[in-house]
Image (cartoon, rainbow, N blue to C red; front, side):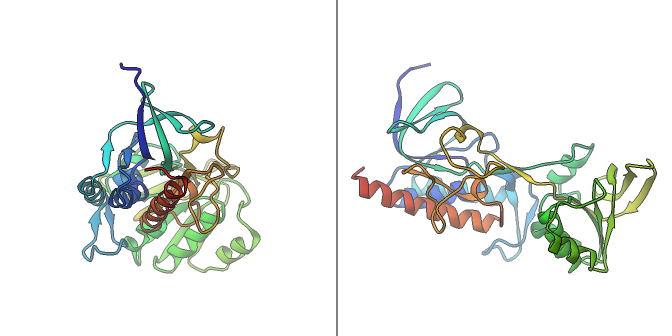
Length: 316
């Protein structure tokens, strides 16, 4: 491999709605962005089957098709979209240095981090396979709940997000079976009270999912009681896993300010991080909404923030 260092104006790390939108805006602004797509080009949308809630697709769109459209649009605008992942960064020097595929180094005047977040899974058989094939397992109730109107569904989780998603599902599903691993929830008292006061949410304490019953689609779950080991079979059309997400931010930890769970902190109303010239967009800095449309919006913001930064600093 050549030891020559490539110099770019704007480097976008990670694809998905945030990265591709940032690439579209940066390319149109003549910033000649270079994007490295990461280990999962297209991000979480690549394991999402049908997307119904993204504006502009009246019939809905398959997640991978939508990502292919965004990539094609970014390329048409002139973005240099590449396969590869950022393996190391040095944000203490200027220009910033980013190692790609543990092989080559790139220097960049500005960086947009759009590495996303990965859903945590339970780690039981069939779970991730059914999530990627539209078989009724999902890590996003807001994304997929509407597919299961008037049906019985299950949700796993004990935090505020799990409670919010259970409440959301309860508005459209006939029954929501909520599995709590211990004898208490981690969620705030107000959220717990709301869940327990909702008549069609049935809470199972000290309970874990022992098995997913499915052929092509989920038909039931076997739930084990931790204290008695008793197994209960519950017919459901969907299982929502709400045990959290891991932001893909590890390589930036020595330099970028994050919250205790690894989400990058940005100046409110902007995509600016604690390092001038480094911006963050999409799920890597958003633990509240985590939608394709909000990720795309923040990708647009990051490109505009980067453009202003480069102009102010006199970069061309």
